Image 1 (cartoon, one colour):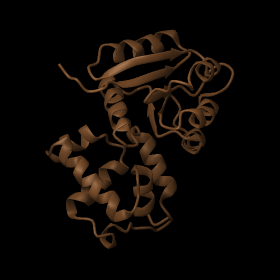
Image 2 (image 1 turned 135 degrees about the horizontal axis):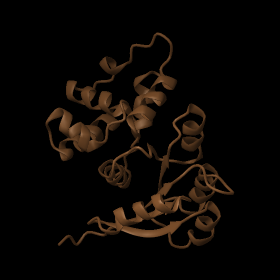
Image 3 (image 1 turned 30 degrees about the vertical axis):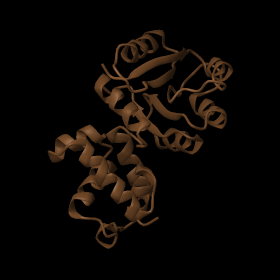
Image 4 (image 1 turned 90 degrees about the vertical axis):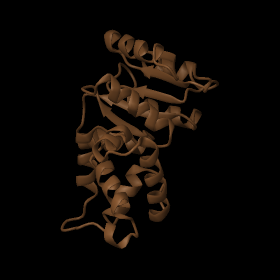
Length: 213
């Protein structure tokens, strides 16, 4: 039996069925804990603060204050928590407003249970998971017209360039591992060295630096 401290996950979702499905997912997953559940931003803001979760899964369309407003306020109280937007919306405005508010990741409600669990694990280990379609929109927004990238000038190895390209597509660590045929631990080592070479701290900054902004 694992003796590691479980990842404490709070859920803010107004749909009863989705909320309970997520709660059950983390309730029975080894290494994770369904910490608290909330149906509104106001309830989350009232109950969280003194004792903070490790990860908050946040819907955007909530009755009353939106999920983006909730992240903006909650991140000031729970600065150590990681915020994962979980929504049906992938339009540019909502994506970038959520990221500016303090969200660390952004996945769609079409994600599978395994993808949700992988996203939470990636968040807790310092990653910035995004659904592939969302990541492509971020990349498209960051890419200057006519840019060809600057990987060749960055000092990255061929493997590190492969990993960064897959990160830019929005793949999770496990998906990159499967794609390249190497372990997740090796992927993390490549990412750590890549971030050091690019002088960045997360996926978004790495993609930003790659595209020259």
